[in-house]
Length: 147
Image (cartoon, rainbow, N blue to C red; front, top):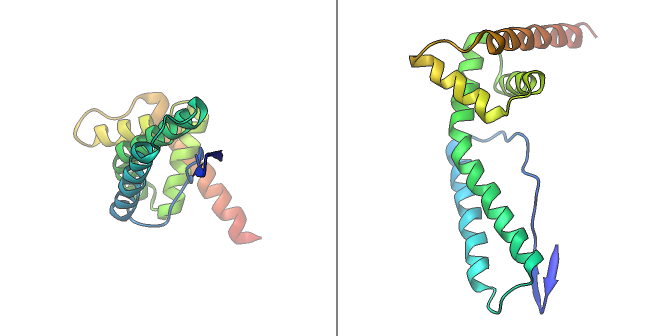
């Protein structure tokens, strides 16, 4: 949080990892957040200190990034739910697991899965990572159910 001449600017650098609401409602929420941050930049009046301005620009970039990537991640989550017979939350965890084990960004994995619907299947390493993530999910689910 930065304060400058009766102006308080909050820069939240961490977006929630998962939200339970449908993509459309969050897109509207993100768009509102983006426009509010943009309006804040315009209302600032006298030039804000460089740190506050950078924080606002960073927040705008993060919100813009969320708006661009959320639909593709939602589609990929649906694909994973169909392939693995898992819940919405479990599908997201599978995508995160694949990202973690392949060192590929979540949005890139999501895009590759979505592209594979009408195109060639994902690469061998991605298919293997997806298979392994499903196995870990099943093992974790089995372990949780027996405890």
